[in-house]
Length: 296
Ligand SMILES: *[C@@H]1O[C@H](CO)[C@@H](O)[C@H](O)[C@H]1NC(C)=O
Ligand SMILES: *[C@@H]1O[C@H](CO)[C@@H](O)[C@H](O)[C@H]1NC(C)=O
Ligand SMILES: *[C@@H]1O[C@H](CO)[C@@H](O)[C@H](O)[C@H]1NC(C)=O
Ligand SMILES: *[C@@H]1O[C@H](CO)[C@@H](O)[C@H](O)[C@H]1NC(C)=O
Image (cartoon, rainbow, N blue to C red; front, top):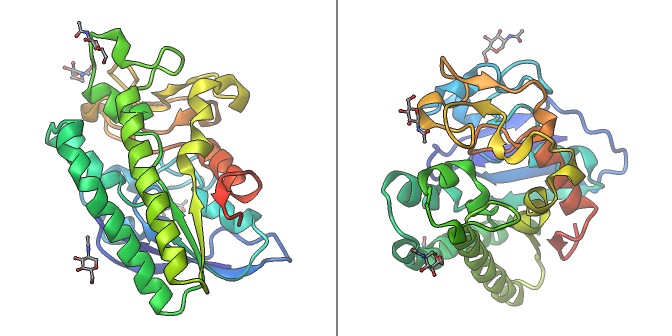
């Protein structure tokens, strides 16, 4: 099976097919996956254009767990889209539109110091852009669409590091995540779910599925041990010099950064992206669990 990945927003729009992960299921219901998204689902396009801004993904330890080498994936191994390809029972083409929006929020929050109140009015615009992209594909004849929501931003180590607060009530007592940012992600997801409902009415012939990345991953933070994340869910496997083992100046792969012994015991790979182990759980929740509606 082929995965076509279209990466946009921060990254140039390019296409590649990738046969590096063989399909194991003879009952494949979809023959190919077309993916439109950012570095959470990029299987190599950004590297193919030179990886400006994130040259580390061209080198180990990126890729160490599964490929034994860097493939341009921003993780230690495979991504959600790789596992969906391997595990699903698919026949026609599946279009994965996202995850989109992560970068649109990362830039104002992490680099421009914007507040939640300042960024909140952008959310309907981001949703509109996602709906526009999905609409364009349906108009071109795509039928099976998976549109993912955002992951919990308040549990992303880059956010936790940027927004260190001395007020303990800013943090969730169980997870250690920043509740206000998780609420922000939920707000994005809620608007997306509503917009997809409208889109289903407009295109009843399309099968428009919402993939709840938030729901499929929030358990990592409440019950990390259940997932084998003994190294922790809010500590980066690869990085250094910060309270969450994350510091932009010792980002994974730069000289002076360190990498944990066993990435499968961590949810976060480099403080921004998740580990192969975490992506595998998310994909499992989407394909076999309750986190895609209607189900895949
Ligand atoms: C690993 O990847 C680099 C660039 O991505 C490539 O130059 C090198 O030949 C690869 N090594 C192996 C053993 O595949
Ligand atoms: C979505 O598409 C409409 C119609 O083409 C356009 O007017 C609007 O600007 C687009 N919105 C975004 C956020 O791209
Ligand atoms: C701490 O945060 C809570 C909720 O975010 C807020 O209600 C409270 O006023 C804050 N306390 C201080 C001392 O800033
Ligand atoms: C990040 O590393 C720099 C250089 O070692 C250090 O000065 C800074 O305090 C670190 N930041 C955090 C959040 O620990």
